Image 1 (tube, one colour):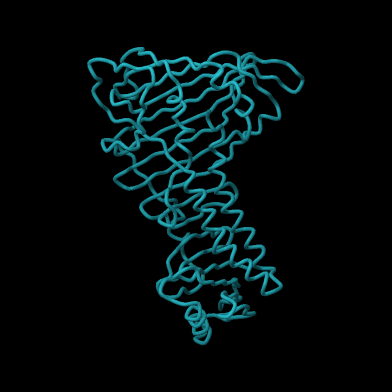
Image 2: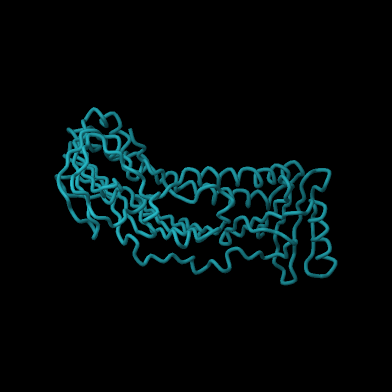
Length: 386
């Protein structure tokens, strides 16, 4: 029925970071042309593929516009909810989405995942952070054509947002679409939520609709090693929507029995919560403090080099050079060497091999591995600090 671990998509950013780190280790240790060529191919093919996979699994939730409720509640059974992100009337908002596991006999509450964010359509900007059960966080910011991501232990990375199709972090089905899988909604009444006039609906989620998936609810959060779950009756869902059926808030409660490693059974519940606020309020999104320096290359760049991605804390920068061949890129750096701006050492590959790798030594002694390879009509440049 529902996917349970949207943070797994967010942690794909760790795959990007790991790719940079892993390739970085290889870059400093290649012993043959074949190894170097394989490394180049990984950098110019796997990295974009990883970024694309991450970006296209991502989505945001959104807010509901402040509206006047209709005179009568619509006839419902199935609520035809519409993604509020598509509303032109919604220009800015904040949101929070959570999955929580509660042991009722001990009153222990475990936050499985929390997603908080903000969107400003006028800025063409969004900012989100997501925390898992182990308190690990990722954060991402997109403003116009620039994108930044922060992952645990690696600081901020940057990339050109137009290098991928989407700039959103979780599947919308995971965030607020559970309520559209349910029939039998009943009108509760008109209510105001965060200053927004809404209509409140309630439904019972039959046990058969979700009990087959109870074993997956804790998977991915590190708690499935401590408890196994079984359904303990129908779940209840409450949703607050505008008359146009934009979601402002929902709460879904799943009653379960949690069996611990000693075989003790605990009455428990799983909770899903979603809410938006500050709709069309003062929501300003700023780049990270490090943004000005993240994309700066430590080496001279050929004309028309375009920033692709950077992970400075890991000593890695990626650029795409337009309108130049591999031979011209090689000549550019050789001319830099002749002018005394840098030294080149240990060249590998060349035009006949379809790639070029060289160690670049700056006047201050800093050393970088430079790799270049044609990629369509451009040349992909990878710079890694040694």
